[in-house]
Amino acid sequence: MASLKKEVISLEVEKSRLNREKSMLVMNKALILYFVFMFVAVLGFVNNYIGRTMLNVLIIMGLCVLIIGTIPYIKTMHEEEQRLNDLIKKINLK
Image (cartoon, rainbow, N blue to C red; front, side, top):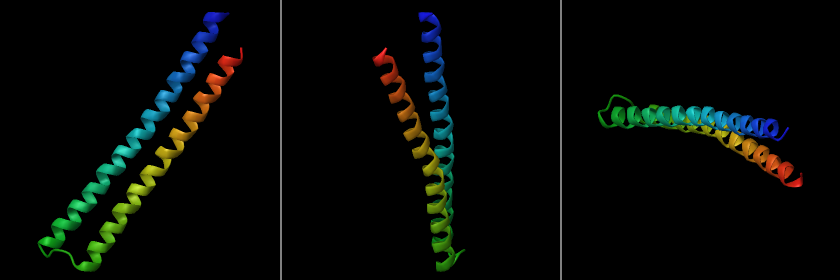
């Protein structure tokens, strides 16, 4: 019976780890996209390929991508922290 509980706890921890990895992948892709937007915006503006309004649009779009990529990461981290804290409390009570 004790080994079964250990296995369940191990699976819960592994599931939390997978959720964190998935959210980290989304965050990394959003960060890469943000830097691509900034690179294109600055390079285009310096070489006079884009105007001031397009530069502003690209910067705002880059920031939006970064925010949209960060929110799921923060949400997942908070949920997993709560889940692990509940699991620790449950283990300590028994």
